[in-house]
Length: 201
Image (cartoon, rainbow, N blue to C red; front, side):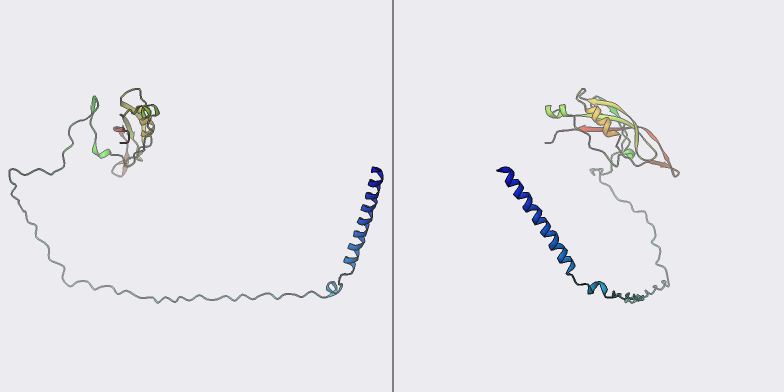
């Protein structure tokens, strides 16, 4: 029974396929042949005309002012003296001459070598989780281009919490204005910088 159904299906498939092929051939053959026999139409080329650009803006000429006939008179210099009362408060900037003490050791800090860029050091994870605060003092050499090299840790407090290691990584990215003498950059050794590690309040 199954063999008969397969045979009938195959025979019907062959007949339908043959009928479709004949139908396609008739449709192709019945097309209009006049389109193929007509002459092709040539589309003319468009002519591009070069145009000259003209400026619409009016040029205005500014008149130069005339030189003054007589120069202004010179202001005479006078020495003005003020009377200073005995109880006056001195508002002058303090003179940096002593040592700036940090922790248990002191060092002198030259105000000429304040960095123009200070990177944010990575807060040590263990110190952060325990709420520990501290600082680290690093000594660097300022290069002729304003960078730093050869950082050395001078002081770390409290020790063993990673503040010194974090400060050493950040010290490599410090930027300073280079020292220039007669137009030539000079290296400046033994410059100290203090990195403070404080928890946000």
